[in-house]
Length: 294
Length: 294
Image (tube, rainbow over all chains, first blue to last red; front, side):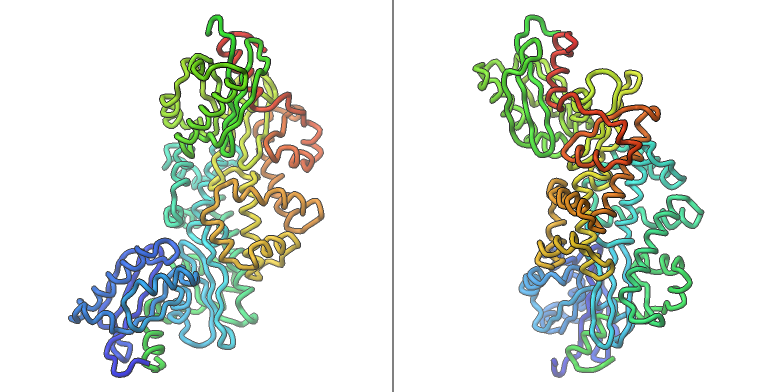
């Protein structure tokens, strides 16, 4: 507990960006700021710079000197923070006197369902499932799209490019969606291969909205891949939900678009998230450092 | 045509290694040599060094001065040579006065079926299909394992690691094979993720033999992924074989082990390859530079 503390910081850091919120001792937000990527596994230096940048900006925005930064207790939820060795290195490179670093999935669950039992499917570029049952919190998935992250945006985009190449080779019949993608690459498969060779998960994820759009139009491949994606999600929900009545949230960039495509059995157990990941980080900052339960 | 030439070189260059064969004017091999990787897309400098190293060694082995190297006509089949821009750069960095650079799939087909019509499924770390119909040669697949190379060793290995993580997360039931893989990583999923993040196709391909071994033992996941792999291969064979009687070869590191798992319908149309890719390169060197048809 940090006595007499007037301000707290919450941070939500992921592969595409990092957000900070400065709040008062009651958890009321005073200012917000954004910066670049803060994925602990991708680059420690980039993560440190992004965190310092958005936290400093949040202080300045609230009229507080940047020199105060090390004294403000901070709760961070960062992508890749489950990798303890990296986590430790990041911690040593940051100036905060009181800091907690947890995963972004952890603050997302806090934001979505609060500190009681509950579950959240977090699906954006990747996919990860965070849940708390009888007070014990667990994580499923989130292994990155090379060997995991099923149904995430990167997984969807890569599947589409693979299909486009099978269509180019006349092995599969093709659909309006695969035709559109091949057109975008000038019907040149080598351009797809060159793109894929250097593509980061977010680059593949750029194609996700197109897949949802075409699935809505009844496109054969769009519907096929959507069926696979929903099957992966429902199979994992079966794993994380303790019984047939358990409720869950669908969050992350693709959470809402997937939610409306779930089977009725799952759709009726969906609940809205209370707040976002950053609100979870702020709440955890207050709980952890002031002892207040918001 | 190169008049009065006594020697010719054939080169087979792939992602894992490069082989050269020096032959006389009748195509009789005089010497062989090996060197490292020669994949045009991966690294031009490495490819150039590997090619020069094994060609020079082949000359020395046959008692010919290395100074003669530029004068020996050479036919190379190299992985990635379909990328014309890279191909041109490699060509400019090599000292040969008479050289032809083609894909490794092209020399593989020549080695397997000679210069007439025919087809070869070339499955090793990757997968590519080369065929000649009415004298017109074509290539299908071979797009690399990120968005293609279905059923190749890298594709198999990655699928196994993905399944192992689903088993670790208790989403899938698991088999002896997935248990063995998890054991190899100390049942630590983060080690699998770290491995996958830096893994080259060949690193994933290391797991391919294990999959065949366990499929033979009746392992549930081994059989499942084998069924997918065979379906991909047969679907592509349907595409490349002009009619129901057309014959084909299965070559590459996994060609033989897949061949015995094909459905009877395909198995009965299998023929043995006449020779390997390097023998194809040698044959093409003679045909191209001396005008002789071997």
